[in-house]
Length: 457
Image (cartoon, rainbow, N blue to C red):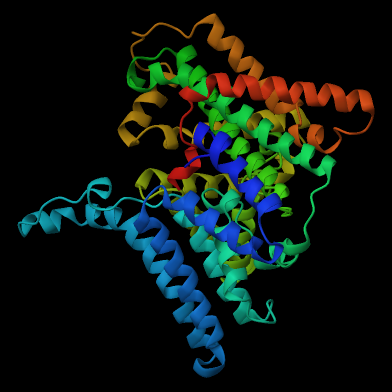
């Protein structure tokens, strides 16, 4: 099930809200959310829900046995199964495919990830949360072992299960413990609905529309003109921006409905002044997870260059089991280290030029999400004017929509609109009317909507 579907909006969510607020005994609310989260996830496959449950059960068992096993052994055992399950489901195809020459020489058949193993949606996200819980318990950041039900909801909570944010237990523990007494205020409900509807609009009305305009050019990257290649470059950049931004807003809004204040995961990253600043704004929870659980334990800035290469390689692999993602990670490592070396020159440039340069560099990197290596090479050739121009240029309508997307990206702050929607009665009325109009538009166009891009990760 996905957020941008009629089943979720018209069946699952209303039914859950009715059961949660009207029909349930308050002390059972946590089990209602756990059951709803497993139903939400299990509809993609019983095996996937089983893997989620086993990860929860496994880490719970070993963090409880730390007094008998010793902290280090308990930590190792607690994280080994989640990591191995992630490797098996997400990376086994990549590993086998890169060993295929050896296997083919020995008469083995080829291996296909999607034929042999179906990737559970969001396994990277909930595995990282499982691992962080075990490490935080080992470090003493979690003083008491959480109850099984608390841990289960922390990992499986459906708003952030599939595409984040990657939260720490301390960020949601108060909300979990307060579920039985939670009462949502009218204004909080309006604010939560604002996040959800703005997120759906970003996904359905902007990201999916950009996808329709980009799609005709994907199949022939070597036949694009320079202008067409520029259009694809920036249209896809805004597509992935609004796709992930939309999910992040929906997750925050859904969390608010049940008393969870999930952290902002998207701090207007295209307004970043430099590559280093970009990673403080794009997928914030992933950046901090990598910093706290990889970069700092590896020595932090004492071995800066080595650690930057390591963590960005891992960041690339986290996004996908393919060499294109590894190269994408290394590309950002080069951008960050390059900025560190030349920051004294970069920072003297006008702020608008810094933003434009950073946005352009980031957009070039997204080419590796859109194309494989050979196609990316052809696309960059078209971008530089080295290939034949055989396709029609993008229409005036598509350029106009790209401009509109840019204006919304840089000048419209959805979070600010949601948070200050009740400043005056007139503003509240206009805001509510706008939400109703946006929701109607979302419903009208939702049948063409696609899965969120980050569901692949």
